[in-house]
Image (cartoon, rainbow, N blue to C red; front, side):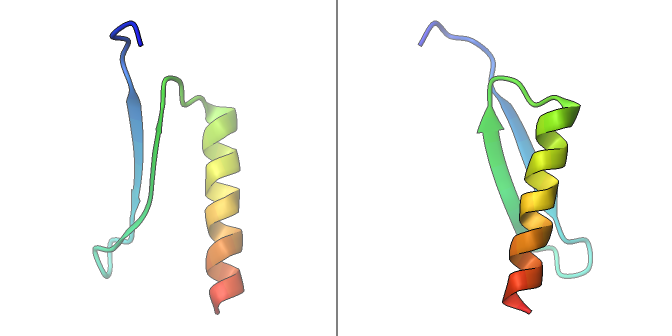
Length: 48
């Protein structure tokens, strides 16, 4: 590691205040955000 910055994406359910996802990466652009959101939605739908 060269001491670069890390970005953290936290997705929290506002009703239950439960943390649904924490993703850490050097870059989180719109494309990756869509991928992470879609994967989270699929996993929540599979649990129900």
